[in-house]
Length: 83
Image 1 (tube, rainbow, N blue to C red):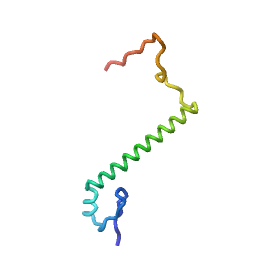
Image 2 (cartoon, rainbow, N blue to C red):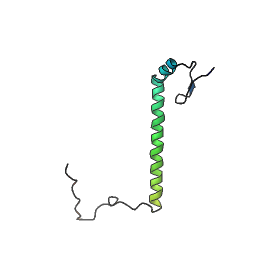
Image 3 (cartoon, rainbow, N blue to C red):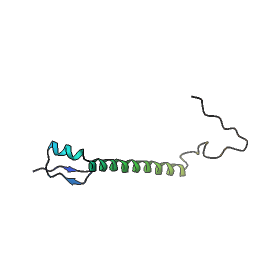
């Protein structure tokens, strides 16, 4: 017989029926595991983007922004645009 495997929970359900799957997927532990999985995935994506941006900046592919250094003495900083 076929048993359903939940990747998020790393476990097999003892019986595979729509009601068992629904009960499992609506459970607190399963929802926590899904949230943790996507949270970790988002953190990895963000870190990868940070690493690529840092590497590109260090290789001179990204010029410094005008805001990366403090303004020269006596320089006026324009106010933000009004809403």
